[in-house]
Amino acid sequence: MTTPTNIPVLVTPTLERLGGYEDALERGWSPDPRRMGDAAYVAAELAALRRNRAGYLDRVLNHPAPAQGASPSAPVNHALWISDGAFAGKADLRYVPASGAVPDGMPGHVGYSVVPWKQGRGYATAALRALVELAGSKGLKELQILCNVENAVSRAVIEKVGGEVDFIGPHRSDRLEQMKVYYRVRV
Ligand SMILES: CC(C)(COP(=O)(O)OP(=O)(O)OC[C@H]1O[C@@H](n2cnc3c(N)ncnc32)[C@H](O)[C@@H]1OP(=O)(O)O)[C@@H](O)C(=O)NCCC(=O)NCCS
Image (cartoon, rainbow, N blue to C red; front, side, top):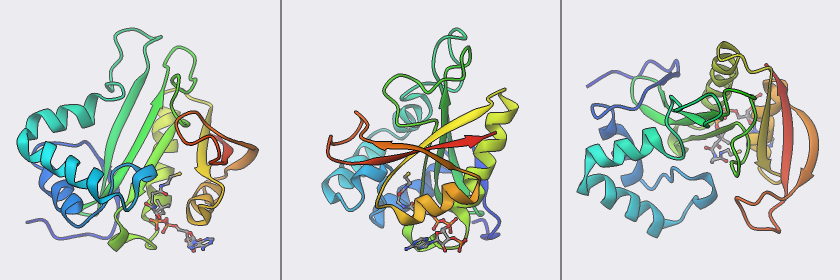
């Protein structure tokens, strides 16, 4: 067992690390921020993981897109986990390498979630900073980051990394009435 360090880093999901993710699901954490508190969804994720661990990991790493695209115009997704020595959450960066654009249908360049029992320790802020750095290393100049208007904590996180409000509106990945703040973050 690894001792938590309290310094969060982004790590690549592996079978070895899947146990921490499994524990988080068992404690009710939802990997999809739109489905927080959805016990049926979390139970289905846990069952799928236990049915086929390698298959589940493959889905984590390759859906909605793999980290390495077939061509520069194919979308890529860097699916990463936040770790303080133990599983603490997830953080994704997705883009189209040729244009730097958000892949079609995706709610912004990034997604992140911290397990409830490790929230309020600066982990999401550190993870988002690391994603911005990763984006810079991939040649991206600007990120579009979306969050629900009422999600004050996530808004604070985005603003701490320099997010500026672009506009407010819905996104087709969510209910039409769910207003989102569209932030711009210079890389
Ligand atoms: C949003 C989320 C990722 C934040 O994770 P976290 O690790 O707790 O965030 P951090 O500790 O890095 O930062 C939280 C900041 O919000 C601030 N904050 C907390 N409650 C707040 C409130 N009600 N209003 C405004 N700011 C608030 C904190 O003070 C802190 O800022 P500070 O460090 O300047 O004090 C986490 O709550 C989460 O996983 N939520 C569910 C999934 C989700 O919403 N994902 C984001 C989708 S856009």
